[in-house]
Image 1: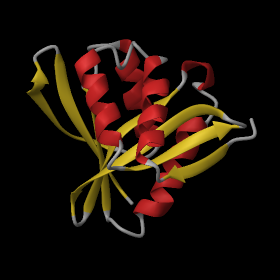
Image 2 (image 1 turned 135 degrees about the horizontal axis):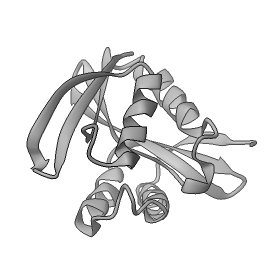
Image 3 (image 1 turned 60 degrees about the horizontal axis):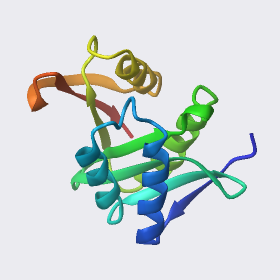
Length: 153
């Protein structure tokens, strides 16, 4: 796959990219209000997009949590491109940038054992070097306990 990963600066292009990719992933992004929040918030975040030609394949966005730490605000790859190394490439491109600005990176996801999709997500983050930091059972809601994972940059 000949993939180009670029940092997107245009706010409306960011929102359009996020909307397009998340629409392809209802198993992860099936709550309309939450999905719309990701779309709206993406406008003001650092965001990288993977393209094949003009086709959008996936994206990753960052949100600063402190002067020393950043968070993967949202990361998504269209289903047709899962398990082809694209998520890893997006992460590496973003991490190259983040290493010059932060010491740590974190990500929030649903804790293990609740949904097979999120168990695969956790396995992916572990493969990148992330470790489990803490679970907040009621941060989002009782059926989606929030797992925070961390990594050194």
